[in-house]
Image (cartoon, rainbow, N blue to C red; front, top):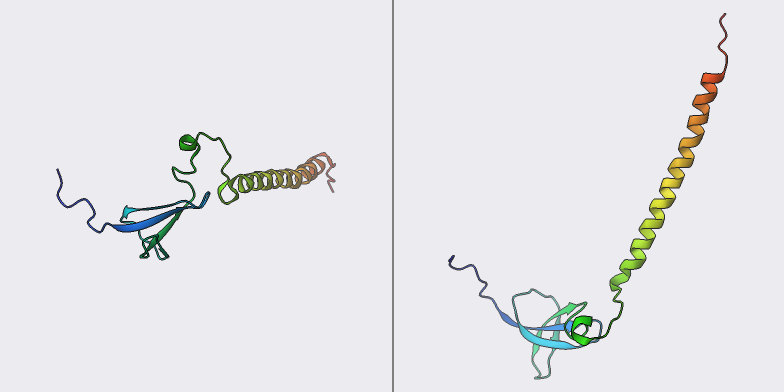
Length: 111
């Protein structure tokens, strides 16, 4: 087994769930610029998470849609923009094709 592969800089950190506001004090090596005051009056680093065991449907038994930062909206907007781009590209290509046909069909004057 390799030696010295595990971190040694564990410290107390507060994890806050952004869905329900629950907070957990535990040990971690994660870096954080924010701090918060805990129930014991001490100040600890704060890490904000989008979902934890207190709000995850598997643990709560409640099924709910968690749309973090509008992911669904972003996906729909990208899909719509791609469809519009495809349509614009197709519309732009149609006139070029008809011009090429007209050039072929036009009689050439030999002079």
